Amino acid sequence: MKLFVCAMAVLFSFSMFSCREGEYFLDEDAVLITDGGNGTGTTTWTNDQSYLIQGKVFVNDGQVLTIEPGTVIRARTGQGNASSALIVARGGKIIAEGTFDNPIIFTAEGDDLQGSVQYLTKGLWGGLIILGNAKLNIEGGEAHVEGISIDEPRALYGGEDDEDNSGILRYVSIRHGGTNIGEGNEINGLTLAGVGSGTTIDHIEIVSNADDGIEMFGGTVNCRNILVAFCGDDAFDYDLGYRGKGQFWLAIADPAAGDNLVEADGGVNPIAGKPYSIPLVYNVTFIGRGAEIGDHLISFFDNAGGKFVNSIFIRQGKGVEVEYSPNREDSYGQFKGGQLEIKNNIFWDIADNNANSIFRVIAEPGIDISEEQIEFENYFAIAENRIVDPGIEVEGTKIHVIPQAAIHENMAPYPDSWFHEVNYKGAFGSYIWAAGWTYLSELGLLN
Image (tube, rainbow, N blue to C red; front, side):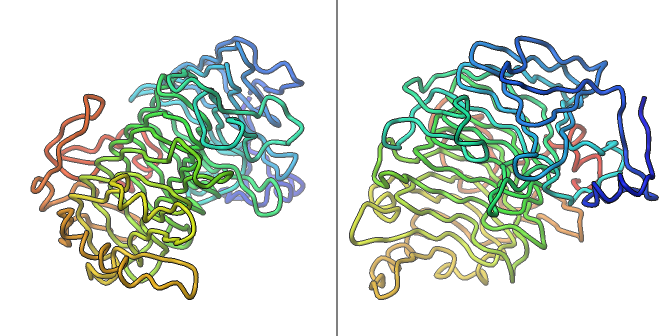
């Protein structure tokens, strides 16, 4: 039975919701999913049921959770120890293979999918976390994922298998996550920690997460057709030696919140740990908070590299920053070594449309970086980047994502067969792959 309840106690308990006419959506027929240490078991969640996750629920080592197309999974609201999340442990698998007509939806309890939760609402539940056996660059080769109690042994990730397979996520929408678990620490919409290249991540949407949209902690997982919108921190974040591939990423910053479109970090313990963080990312469209506000498009720190190619970047106050340190390995060194490339891209309404301001080197106070800054500024043109209006229109909350100009010129070749060889820059050519199945499309925000 699906109900709308107007009791004051319910409204008080879930005051973060923007419910219509004072109502709060409840689904009394939902299957309650808890853990108790046993995980989900090997099972299938079917689309003729709805599901409610309560607390931290794991897919344990050896278990396989299959989710049918069109299934809706909600999670109990709560902060700190009371937060809810679905975690796929090392050795477990999730097969969440939605379709264009029947995507799989993860959202918060109280969301009737018809407007009971406003689209910019963040932090109502945790998120989806996948832990794998691929390599990290941290001492010891494994780590404990953030957001889960340090006493939970199933929360470890990392190993030696870069081809590790944690399952399939396809046509999946993740909404309103990022609950605060303490001391200002929130869960990402989708966490990929030590996930290997055998895993399929394809046609994923993350909307209104309080922390990052997607964070990759090491590993080699490849991600294609990804939409991240209106997150409270970074759209994409990678570290600990992430070496996957990405293509067709759309990031839309929340005009009133958010940090970088990409935060790129290398190592932690040690910073110079190998393998380095060097993903290959092609055909992204990043839309910032506005030409006069917002943080950086991409920030490279702690010896991170990475290659961003054939892409479109618009409407952000600052451009690309690269950290320089004379006393240790750094991201500027990755640039000098050819492991950090920003090439054959379009920039518009970024850092006053001034090429000398779009690419910046940063360092601790008192360090002379004048030579490094001049070299990085000159690289803008050497790498065949352009400042030109691509014709992507932002009208209030609506975004016309198909570019109108300059997207077919000056293309860089694709490095291997994983990438789709297209003749345009940015995430979209003549059609919108995010239309028809995403929350943003349903809201009429993409056209």
